[in-house]
Length: 296
Image 1: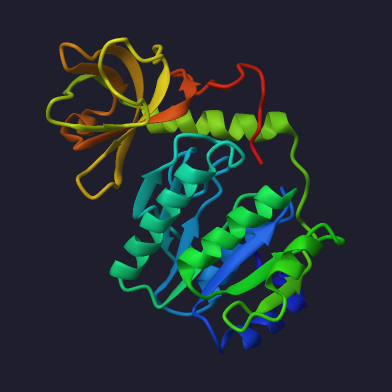
Image 2 (image 1 turned 180 degrees about the vertical axis):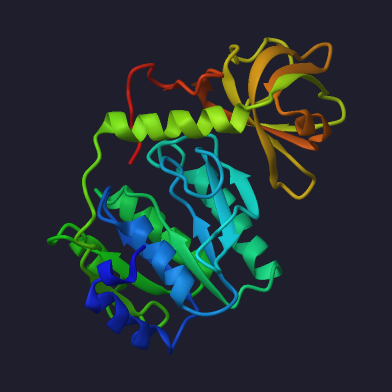
């Protein structure tokens, strides 16, 4: 982000961040410029600052339907690790998202992060949205809470954290350059990212007798409702994403799962089954509704 475009009040907030928690939980509605603020803050807050991208629908670190993390520095940021959630909607993936978020927090701490910036989803409407952000705060233990607010759409969040010493509250305006994107633009962004994640994919067979599986219940008769096209997360033994996969065939009795994935996925120690269908061209639909787009 061009430094001249940074609102002066953002720069003034850096002084307040010099004291207290070394973590910043950033909350804002869709298209309020939250991700722009997160990247700017990660760059200027200090050395060894890491960014956790928990915006599963519009991921900047890692593919969609994951929570990624990376270290800031030099104006560039690369994904150091990603953790599979399996959905692009925070509304229908809260439990899975919190599990992935906890693993991401542990990963950046193990990496020696001095400071951590967390980019949350744009879902801010209703009690469940507030509960999700509060749960993320509880996992962190303490954090500066940065509310990027246009008007008064985050008043419920101000009430939830008001006066809590472990969660100093800061309310900031979005950057002037922040603009609303249509659902079509957000979907196109995800499709491009999904296509990139599946580039170079090959057919791969996994032995379910050797690989941990979650997200489908018991892999026994009767056959679980798991049709071809289901999104898969192929993880290493630490639960970190190796690559995404797309289910081709599931044979529970024979202990075989065949999927489309990058060659590295053949070494997966764990398979997590997502909640959406994905095509190699990046088009995707919800397991709940083939037409609903609940990305926030």
